[in-house]
Image (cartoon, rainbow, N blue to C red; front, side, top):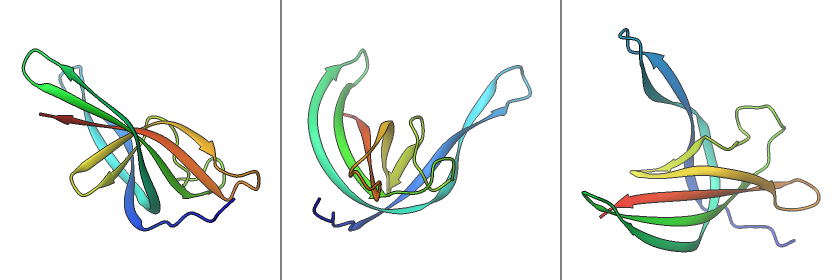
Length: 112
């Protein structure tokens, strides 16, 4: 395997549900740390909604591996953030047999 060039800093976040004191909850995002990443666009599609059009792009985001169960290891349901861009992590796989890198299969949604 060729060593990937990790040239973008992304923030790893995890969803936290907090009571809204009225029987429901509010979703907040807790920052777990920063990761260097390589981001590759895979496919894109547009869908029409009632109020706006929505563009969805899938990405393959490569990061350095971390031990299972640590906050530095991405898992599905978390997200990676770069500035105002949000990448929802859908799946995580190992990129190489030695387990040195992980591939986060993620989706970015943009309202148009």
